[in-house]
Length: 292
Length: 273
Image (cartoon, rainbow over all chains, first blue to last red; front, side, top):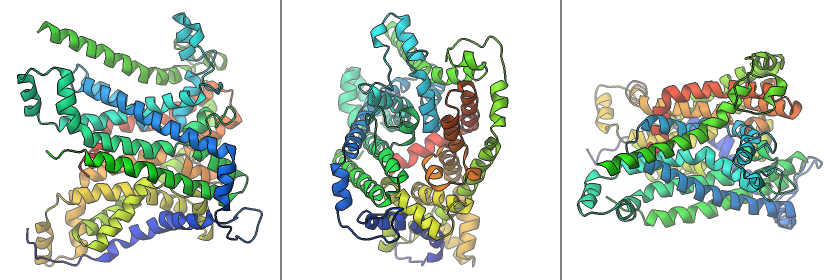
């Protein structure tokens, strides 16, 4: 490759992308930071600057504090469970099991279906009287496990978490499978020759080499789950009470009563939380990756 | 190796159980969409006493459904065309012109992978620009939110296209436009197929965009129509199931036919970046 070679590629190829991205992403984002500091709402003609008042109001609102707490519980639980199950599925399918491709296709399937539809699907599964879950519990005599999963504040958030794990574990699996296939087979054969069992092989050979897949899975999962919206809307609409209220449903409810400045402030909060959580995790995991 | 054959059987059995956990919920929807209203509301897995297509007929009485499908198709096709065009053009220059300015532009695009859209200011800006409630407006909004991952995908792929090809075109007296349209674009075919499918599915399934940005019910997408249907006729399960089957089926067909591209596209970029 000729290193000294310097061609000037035409900047105008970048123009359409940059213009659209600026108008529909960057400008709303930056102006959003400003609107967060204003009293913008549908009842006033003039928008005026009010400093951090919106954020003070947010943190004194029980609903927002609950939503924030729920979003964090949701994001962490889904991320942990999705990665355990995704990794387990990947290890199962990495054994050249019969019908391997069919299983992979099936496990990944829910990920391509609209989350809103998945939400409605599970209102049926969780139905207290006729849902297949409770019917199943009753059939095997575990009647005390047959709960009103979505309307009992004790279980509602947990039930929604399970749906998202069901929906996205196949995605984590696919990334882990790709990671497993990048592990040089000589390393695994060498471990076999040394008489390592599966446990040792996994701990000392496979897992360290899988860290890049762990990084991408955990970071993508955290970013995605804190933004959860329509699945909550379809399953519980934030209820019962505030039991499954999350940041995006809070933003919707504030916006629907015309408090645009407050809603935008909540959106800004959402952005900061995503950055604050995902960036340190990313750099922490990135340092543990091994170059082959 | 007896041990191996037993463990293989156990693994197969465990996979089968997981597969059932995925499939059964979909089966419940499918089976019950062919039952009468009362039977469907029992959500049972037993086959219908009498197969009826009434629920499907009823979805068509709900007048907006065909428009909803049409809108979803218009939005996904429009978004696919413009996202692919703008993203390949941008990735072409970003990868080739490897200086600090272009690195910054690249990072700004990638920011969109992490930071969520600020939806309320977007509505305001679209109203100011008079593109609120228009197909053009929502398509450009979708282009903007799909650019980060497509620019990332194409820039990664551009690295594998040798610069010698560029030089050959210039020596032949070809322009940048010739280079891009005759050489680069055809070589980007594989990631283009991937991005096309992923964008289509993203737009088809999206709820948040149309929910906030389209108040005109004639322009609602199919997902928004389902949402509205549920709020209006919450108790009519059979019809809702038929509705859901109709929304899922196109995505399911695309997925089953082209899953190779979806899965490779989602994993390729993620592990090498």
